[in-house]
Length: 197
Length: 197
Image 1 (cartoon, each protein chain N blue to C red):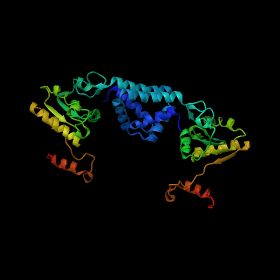
Image 2: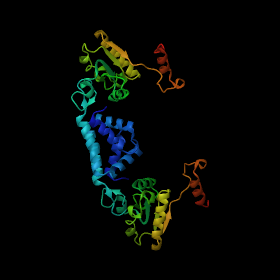
Image 3: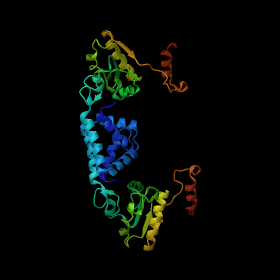
């Protein structure tokens, strides 16, 4: 019912994750009503991000430099590397301002069901980073089957190298409710209990 | 925390209607992972829609031709014009396949609160279309204060021209529940009652 090129724009928006048909129509109409200048700014942002952002040669996080800001910072503790599944996880942890070490981004997790093996994520890029300077590797993959499998795989790989490998704590979230916590979380919370001092 | 150009892309997505921060991050990451070819197809769709789609010189609906498919069709009944607020409304009515006349798209409704007067919407473009061929104008603006005001304004304008002006029926939606209908809808449903034959 819409002109062909408008329908094609609706279809393109519809392909994006989380964008249903109604949202796609709304977004396409919004684009149509946008000034040429603003639409160009949107297009430029896509092109610029796609051409300038790549993986940091050390930690594999997204960056627009050769070495990312964290890897090149003199203020970070170079004895600890926190291994995470995605750049979004790094951003989440950075926001807490609680962690001052380095990162390593795997870009996924081992998942035999999806045909993703150890060689399909950035594990081999982690090994040359494990110099004598590194004393601890924190496995901060997600508490899913895939995240656990990945953490276990990397822990076994690093054990012979004499590096301490730790796993982030799982338990009841701080704003969570014990009544509504799932069984696995609750049993992890009991397992990981600590003495109150 | 993200590279500057990625953050700028997230900000651009965040400006779109209905896209919150989390969706903007998800969409920007999706764009980053898209092949260059697919991203280009998305950009081309925006450019093509923006450059080729404009208003039909007759009905003011969106089209990529001089005269839209409906206005140029030989199969449409040229005696009736249905006046609607937006191209989306036309698409909704076309989907019913119940209407075979022409359209006129106002691109808005009179709204003194928002400083939108009769001259700010496509009312003057309707007048030259009211040739002797046209016997009925259906006011299918929304049942809102603005839509009603617009319908009333146009009805008064056309009365001296001897054209029958009708208003679409309001009432309980077909899949609606009387119990939960709002008072205005319910009183409109009573007002508009018809004899059962």
